[in-house]
Length: 567
Ligand SMILES: *[C@@H]1O[C@H](CO)[C@@H](O)[C@H](O)[C@H]1NC(C)=O
Ligand SMILES: *[C@@H]1O[C@H](CO)[C@@H](O)[C@H](O)[C@H]1NC(C)=O
Image (cartoon, rainbow, N blue to C red; front, side, top):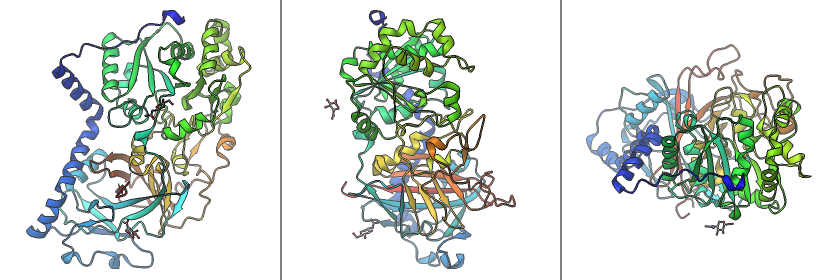
């Protein structure tokens, strides 16, 4: 097997720089199509800042101010008091923060309309914009950081996309102390080679395309590889599809080899065969860890992951991974690494698997790997290791398989710093946008993603995932996961407890919580990061106990994270 490995399929035909540029442009349009528009919006918004300020001063158009929604604001003071009463003298729409970054609180109707259409909001909706000043300090990451400041400084504003509004003075930014954790752009993944088996169709479908996610953990975000090698197997792909995939990935800086995988093998065997494929790769002598993962496995904190793996002895045969969070799945399939969370094999163990491959994929072994749910690749791999060595699984519980059903908020809002994420592409699993969630790490460091900031007026920013408001106060244990999700198909109420601990009760439909959930984020030209959080009035979760909606309006919360001035 070792000697007959096919050479990776590569496209060397792009000699003509014009053709290359064209392909690059097409690829960018394909990959970034959706966000390109907001990119441009954001850039023009930044360019416009100064001009807008001047226009507002000179033209004095009678545009008026947005209506107030009448909720929120500082507790104890009425919405009336919170309204900007100095509207007529508030003609300076920009403020300088300490960080020398310009803050602008105008109403860019082009962007608001774009969001209204993209997220299917009503034409009139609540809009709150807040700047957040990052303060990097010599402190440890905290799961929850309490702030003295309020999240809302005025009553919430209602905008109508058909109207125009005058710019306003931005409130002082929220100031959030964070640790001096490293930035994603400086991660070094040279010790790792990743094997993923998928299809061309999944790579090109907008709902499952993993290229942006791979860009986050396999490059510096500026078009260069971070040293991590991706070995991609595409089931039964054509030459043109292999070419296209190779070009798209290398154009964004990913160091990849693309192979066609054999459609005559069943999935479990193709999965097992990933290990010899990595072991026989010419780059393997420079690698410490060969990693088997799915096309929806995401590593949000690569520095932390690499630091963690450095604690293990890569010169020993090592099998590192995590269980399913659902104890039923262990009862059903056995005690092994569940592959979607990522399985880390040391090179000496991969050697054993490679040498024993033939005996590990016989019809008998395939039958033994069938638990009634079809032959399982994870089981085939475990049996191959356990039956040919004394090596046992080393549990790394910060990896997450995420075999959870329903609303995943309780997981992402737990203040967690996960080493991997999985199952976020919908279907029977949840939908999440880890590429967008982690953008804030570019401005405030890896620790910042999913870190929680609790304001004096009972808001919690679960950074990158949601902004939640608890109108009856925060009187529950933030150290526990909120049970917004559940196990399936057999939910005994305690399936997840061995991994998550018992969970506190869900606040769905209690009138005690409402959240705005992140839909997109953008790293701006000036290094700041914009996040767009959206809530819909008809969200089934945010109801009072009598079934009435907690908020009759849709809403957008925009947070802009400002980098430190001299960071
Ligand atoms: C501005 O600087 C002052 C004093 O250094 C500090 O107390 C305040 O929090 C800073 N504000 C921001 C927005 O960084
Ligand atoms: C990345 O890690 C490799 C292997 O540990 C090391 O040889 C290399 O110098 C590192 N690269 C950078 C840029 O630090």
